[in-house]
Length: 210
View 1 (spheres, rainbow, N blue to C red):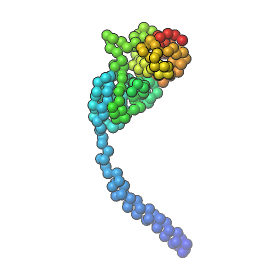
View 2: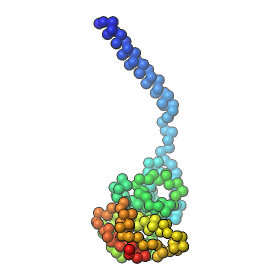
View 3: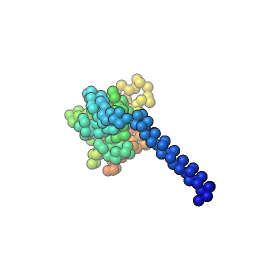
View 4: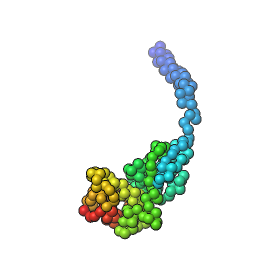
């Protein structure tokens, strides 16, 4: 072996040995910075769901959808794709529609949440629920809770764009074109294809056909 080879081996040994020493030295420091068990596995969260205050102790990874279905047993909100693509899990949070499968329950501390159960009852349907029945806005019914929650919020979105003096009641909502309502509802998928009837129900509630 030449002197050059010995020098090369020595350099390699120095690099390897130095890297190993750094790795070993870093282990205690890393453990000290992030000791195991410092993150709580559960957290309390208080929500106002359909007008009632609810305090839950949930896993920090629990979605709002699972909190509603598994902790509060409000199973009207459906789990479809679980990836925010179908809209079956749509609920209304602080007046805005969201996909509850994409949102953690602990993110909504203190928020007001409305599910399909909070819109109306069998004895007193919400106008949108009644319109869906009238216009056959559903077939299998699986997507219907999300469709109705989204439809209610869509009309509120449209309503928010007009002066307050014409927002007195549901019949004061402005007309929206069929195309606009379809576009706004595009995040809610109906595999049965009841889209035309859903648009008719929304137009009925909005106060007339555009």
